Image 1 (cartoon, one colour):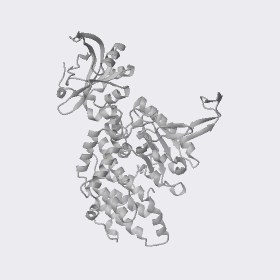
Image 2 (tube, helix red, strand yellow):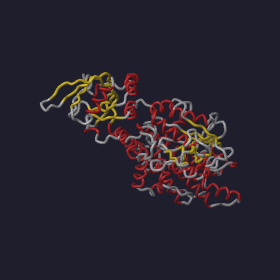
Image 3 (cartoon, rainbow, N blue to C red):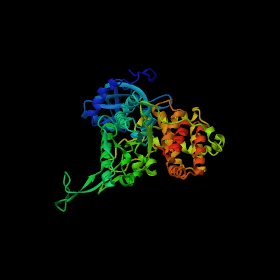
Image 4 (cartoon, rainbow, N blue to C red):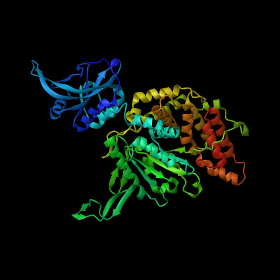
Length: 558
């Protein structure tokens, strides 16, 4: 008997296992409308198939071919449509023939489990079925039905649980949010603080046990090592050119090989595979990465693929690079240029035996004219805030991302790693929540405060801060709240500023070092101090701390 939606139990993952097993053996699977409009079946015992309706032939043929055909059930709720059940159908029989000669068949419901409702608006962009409610029977791929089965209890939920329960939960939660926001990560700090271990823990929670390729950087790396190209001699499967084995073959580089692994992993398990580069700053990154810097931005991955020899390899949206960097030997190694810094979040990994080296800022000690927070906030318009918020939400939203065009791209590949974090209703609700939340910052909301600080840094000629940096900050806060609801606060905004905004000040470190070496009372130092004071006055105390440390050490990551 049909159970009203309000009285049904929530999904029991163990009860879904037999349905998952049937899905693994099935060549056809469906989304069926129930108890709504023309499709009035309650699905508990049977499902009727009327000859001539869209999807009739596919479903009937599938049931005749297989003992069990997996399905999810779609039902109209009070003010929205939702997926409310999962099960299998079998044993199709002719039930009646009407006066027009049209046949009606009935299939028996073999298994049925009610699930916690899944908003159709959230799922539909991922399964791309258009006006799905107008068709009672919609055929899905295995990946699409697996996505539905995993919606409330899939790998994203398990990753959040594993990260939250880890011994360095604060660090890994911060890193997790950066990855959801679409960024790669550099873990930096002194030797022995656990940078590589943290990267491995993070990858294990998200990708699984054996889905991380580890490479140690070296100064000899070239673009050929990273991307690939022509190599002498025949390949494992020699190419035949003019009836002769080729003397050359296409050889994958490190990133190309891991990108292929990532695409295959997404198709097979809906989980990515990543690259970890140890001791990153031992490589000449401009020489090694070259044009690949562009593809480290999510916005370019749909339209451009990795190219080597005469081959191409799409870079999945879910592909990420994790890296580690020691701060004690920075002066002897290659520096990280702007193109690289722009595409990575930088996370300090302090010793577990002590606290971070950050100092407390005392604005009163600076003998410089202070920038009043209220005056700085006046430089920000409502349209600026709205534009930045809209862009950040679009970055994570699956409905807004371009589809890969290249052959070999994954079928389901959200920028935000997990479909649950990439759907329009959840993103809109989350963005509204964090904008309305009182985080203890000056201004109308946290975006207002961050824009005021970035505008001031530009206005006082300390650094030029583009809107993309502020968008990174907002995307991080949004991603953190998506993963850890109700937890985003002032500290979260500070984390984002330290990861994205503070590294941009590396551009003025050489000016500060020169002024110090020449014992000059340089103007840039005075302006830099004003930005530190403003950060403190806006409520971004850790950002002010990091900038204060940079002023003292003349190094951002030292």
